[in-house]
Image (cartoon, rainbow, N blue to C red; front, side, top):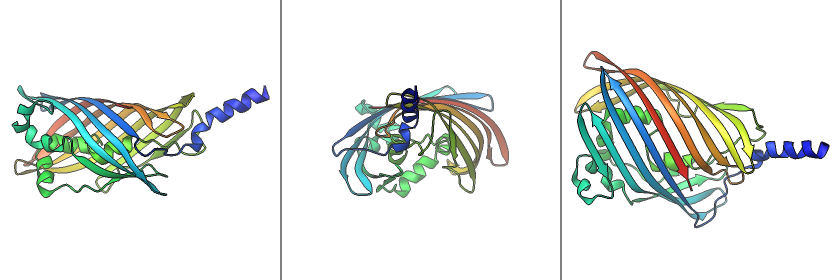
Length: 276
């Protein structure tokens, strides 16, 4: 009986020894599906996005891995007050569409990314041009989604592929962090280790985020105030600390302030991402 209990304890704390373990030449394919519905002043907008990315490890040093991130495929379908727009990176004709002008130059571009071996944190060498920053600011909804961490970019996607469980955490334990907080946004995320089966750990996630994002849309200044709650799960390989799958559902309420007027908004976002 003592041996059985010992084995159970070892299994329950197996994640404590987890580290970021990658190999030169290793490839991680990331596929993501996101659906979003937004209501503003009684009007509904929808957005469906599907993407496929690749993370490839090129080299390793004592402290980090050198990798490249590449967005291979992207499709977006949006309906705003009866006006439909769409973009599909596999349709050449879409390159010159309104959405295509924003997304097409990101497809197939390799971005150098460094991954810290101890923390799993990612940093990219790419620096956005002023023109691209201005383009992203034209869409107030993009500003809101960036606040929620839903912006698809090389750093966010690469970092999401790695999840380190703190040392000493056992099944049933919880821990929190305030990553994403700044002077305008307060963010708290709580993780709970639900179970371990073999080398797979299941972590439940609950986060709260409140704050204000200032954006510019068509030459007009706008402030987006939101209160968001997000629930989800993360499946992690305890031997490598590589994420296998994430699911999350975000419920958002708030308002947009523009030209002295305040417009209430509500949104729900569902996102599923797999890593292979």
